[in-house]
Length: 156
Image 1: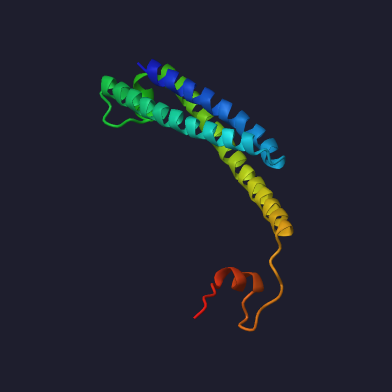
Image 2 (image 1 turned 90 degrees about the horizontal axis):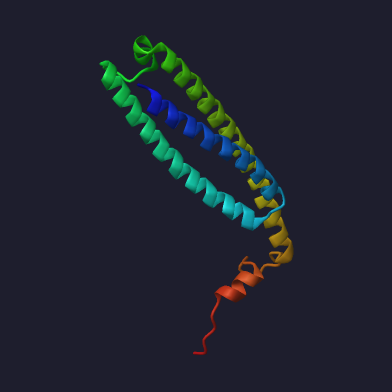
């Protein structure tokens, strides 16, 4: 009865395990400012998000069908456990693994975002060092580089 839901949950768990490992490896790409690996990682995350969305909809449909087979009005683990306790226990364990992996992925994403923010600050500081803003102002209080680039002269 719950075989399809359990198989989909196991597939979801495998996808999350792979994404957690990829997110751990992404930290090194962020620290080394490897733009190719960072962009490849972003593309992989987009593919992962699409895969997970499809698996979630498959899981929801499988659970609805299972609840319909047992005559449950709601799709809850408690209602399914009343009719099929063994299969529901396995599904509950698999869903607990999925929740734990999702929490680990969220924590890794938070850390990677922090590292990415620091990397961005380093790049901005480097670019500012390469092209510093002038410290002189003209008589109107505008920086001299801005007044030269923003003013057009025409002979009247």
